[in-house]
Length: 248
Image (tube, rainbow, N blue to C red; front, side):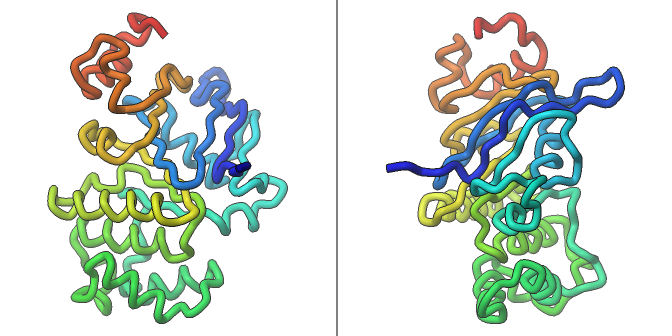
């Protein structure tokens, strides 16, 4: 059975004058797969996500979402994707319901009002339905942003530190919802996190970035042992501090 990747990145590069932020990165995300994009601050994770969203233009390389090139067929490609991050807050002067409605209109979502009701229930936002997002706590804003990210049932879901501001109980619920979404739908997820426990729990495959390059790739549950480390956190620290010490 031929399964087209929901995301295909080839030879991606981003440079600023003499600084190379992303250096010849290639990878795919398959349907029903959650891929972790890991690395220390400055490794290039957010730059890659910004290029996938076409916020930044690559110096070289191609990006396809659902088989559509994001630069040749931008609208069609991005209509299949959505995004959530703690630094990308929803408009604060709109209520939770108004935000979901506005973004649903942008994506052309059918049966929008019923879909919004379902999302508000799923993300436990009933109490905040008519509250302006700017007055919500950081955790409440994160849940609203995650609901927005699901408004168009995207084939590609991009999550940049999605549980960073959530309490452990809510974070566990969100992880479960994202795993359920990937397993039961046609979508795939690209997930960045500095929480290695979270990565080991949710990700099917991980990519370790170092200085803009993919240094390691594999199963988060078996990779630490393959490189002689006790767990994913110890492997992460090694990649961050001494990447050349690894036998890649």
